Image (cartoon, rainbow, N blue to C red):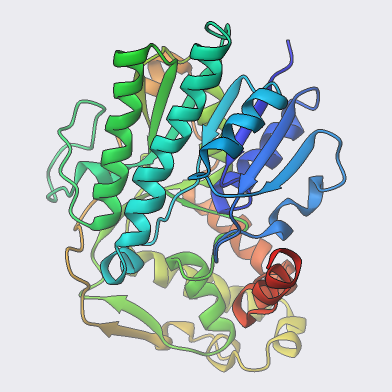
Length: 367
């Protein structure tokens, strides 16, 4: 039986990868993408399906409850997958208001819309699902020897970003227990892969090497993160929608812990290797003198640590493995090579994002 999905934030990094994954696997389904096209949303991420009858793009805000109600009602949406969020920790420290507005108020707006159409108006749409995409950061931080986060790990958010996501997680749970909305939640480790906005660690390192710019490392660089290739995240959500129990949370992770400094050094080595093996890269990126010399690591620069910087995240995905049969398809070594190759082959995408031409185009299109 075909589905109609409403995907919020579907023009963003993870959301767009999910849309591409879903329509590739389920071409009989329809996907409605709702995105406000803030700085991290990019219609170019959906270029592969922009002419498909299976995908409809709607420019709008998740806080616009009447719009969301109309989309669920008119498009006959039965599944809502909620990616839309402000997610950059540094931005949450300098400007937390936007995180409360989008992550808390926006999620509540979606829940109210789903309840009204699916439960109040339609007398319980059979098989409806509200899937909420959250983060491992709601659990706080881990010591070097602490066990990885489980679904029953107490929440202890340490930044305005993670606190806003924790609040939204609780709202989703409450709408099931209070009103009977069919909900599931996934808490995921750090994603990487195609279309990752260049402010984030991995694409920032890749692009800075190409411009011979400093590679800024917070503190000692030994903060540890659990990394997951973005398509493996989409695969995990797919399994939750197919097999996940209502009102359950599933942690999606790669059992793949890396210290930030080790990731940066790995990328430096891969970039050195790429320039050594492909003479055309030096012509395309003449500024990348350190990589051309096989010494990209010389760009590493240590900077003052940011406030409230969690030391370690790690996800225990045992529940998803046992209940859903979830296993990531990519190792970090294979995934990071795929990611690096994508950025080298899609220079026009990240240059447009970085030089602001995309933002100018959006302003002309939508005001």
